[in-house]
Amino acid sequence: DVKVTQSSRYLVKRTGEKVFLECVQDMDHENMFWYRQDPGLGLRLIYFSYDVKMKEKGDIPEGYSVSREKKERFSLILESASTNQTSMYLCASSFPRGPGETQYFGPGTRLLVL
Amino acid sequence: SQQGEEDPQALSIQEGENATMNCSYKTSINNLQWYRQNSGRGLVHLILIRSNEREKHSGRLRVTLDTSKKSSSLLITASRAADTASYFCATPQGSNYKLTFGKGTLLTVNP
Image: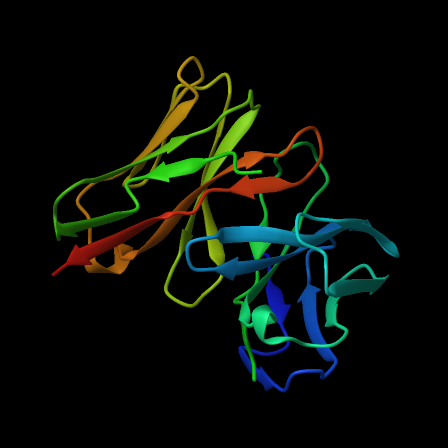
């Protein structure tokens, strides 16, 4: 079974702090994704990585950056956390077999920024 | 941009009843997927249907796809309390590996 793990289930940070969210997958997937999920807005793609050191902006990249130094690990960085970044963050991975490939999700990190 | 839209937004049924959720999308696709999310957890892939398929089954799940109407439905038969979750449809975003998710249908199955 594919396993995608995220470093924390719950996280509380203060405004202005630098926040790191880590995601690790064990299936040698090339593609990895970071989403945020908010009530009424659904899942929105923040960043996408299709290979080590390669990244692509999603729909809402402002205020976020990412790092992919190893194939299995994809980090989301909030450079200076703000209250409007309070959200559920979901990481996913997939093979690059073709358009619309199935994505495998981690359990999510619920981030509260005070 | 929003591709898939689920309908209804919320559905409440009794255990043993069938639950039907619908998804409409806007542009041509080569496949459509359904995912489930239990409260406060990550999404779990349920089923993928390709554009050349009209119907697909997996256990108590039945998915249909009507490409002429740009719509799909997910039927859960003989529902159980454990089926309580949000259900999302997802469609490819262009020719790359990204997916666009709808806002989901919240299904509540009452014991």
